[in-house]
Length: 119
Image (cartoon, rainbow, N blue to C red):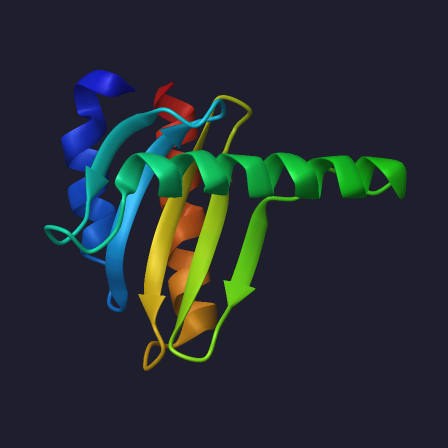
């Protein structure tokens, strides 16, 4: 996955509405990223997104619900999407508020499946 990280990041960035993104290991280590310079602390963002997905998995498990494929964090000015890539990685993306969220989510889910098939 690491050798193809930049290609994956370029594909994620090509989705309309993606303002920043990272491909992250399930432990929170950045595999590949795109953030505008100084826009945020990418390593902290990656670790926190991995923690959010792990917490969602624990919540689902305690409710006897299957593993979540996507976690959505909606704020007034943007949305963060965390999309699982199998059990080893995740896609994190900051989405502009003007984007069609359901379209972006579908496209990122499709990308996650392709990345997972390569791993």
